[in-house]
Length: 219
Image (tube, rainbow, N blue to C red; front, side, top):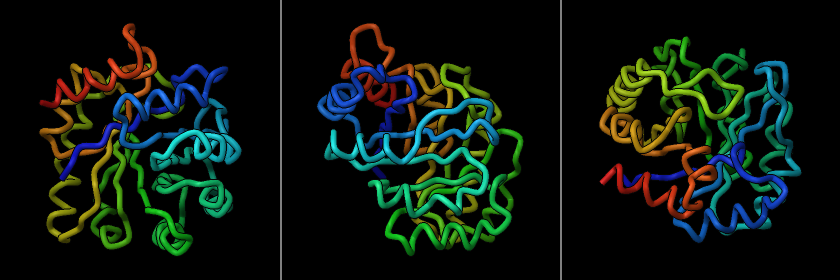
């Protein structure tokens, strides 16, 4: 399975968003990651579907949308209509999570399921057949630039085992504190998609150099 570098625009220079997204594409990114926060499920407020549409107009890459919001089922269509190729929702916010994941697929996008650091992943046993991506948060969601929580590695390993037991093709994504120091450990635990904000958009030598450094750490 190929590895995916998914730069998060949470760390981009928003005054030059189109140029930053294009630079990520030219620098070797595989998709663009958009963290949507509502100020309720997490303390911060970030983007809406208009930013998804703007990014879609600025790149040929797939758009990966992470909804850190309450009642995400009310907004799935608007984000997918705006251009989201993958929509990832939190287990913690969805009382009818199986139905919500099915709805994402029915609307034509890949369905992603997220678990916070303190949330057990045993429920994946009952959801493996309706997910295309499982996102393990390696920080508490809400802000960029946090340090990687080492216990996330055990969860990634467990998720890999559950998916294999159900012969699922879902990819494991990890988000939070991904850098040249942490990406290899996450890979060895079973992750194949890596969300990186500061390590890409905040790299001292530029966006392409940040992506190249992450790939070099994997190699």
